[in-house]
Length: 163
Image 1 (tube, helix red, strand yellow):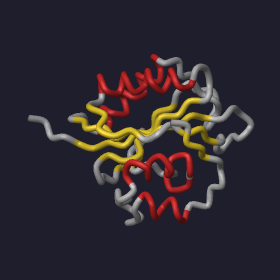
Image 2 (cartoon, helix red, strand yellow):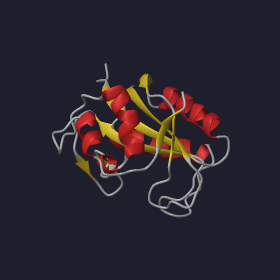
Image 3 (tube, helix red, strand yellow):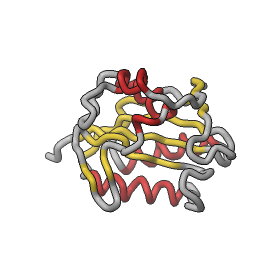
Image 4 (spheres, one colour):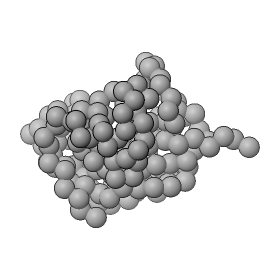
């Protein structure tokens, strides 16, 4: 039997029918990556990086998967493409974005994938939903919990719970 791994994914959308896109992404993830064991509330958040764009809807999922990290990346990139993601500019507006935040407590630094996500500790739109479902999860490099990272995050972007 394949070992079950815990992967945390951040979903984000700021184009189109955002809530429907997030729902479609959750369905694809549940079918192709693994069982969604926890899902945060959905939050409306200020854009980060490139700020002259519509607000995002964000959600964090914890997924049990038998897949290896590179396989998870391949599948979420395929899902983004299927849902209409076109990459125009870094941090620009997008129909869907699916980021791998954590994969167990692994530390990976590859050409295509870095885990933990290298900027998760800088982003309230990531830390607020992550802390909701995994407040005690320990960042394997910083040795701080999600709640501790949120309490020291200097990002002042708006993060408002929708549901």
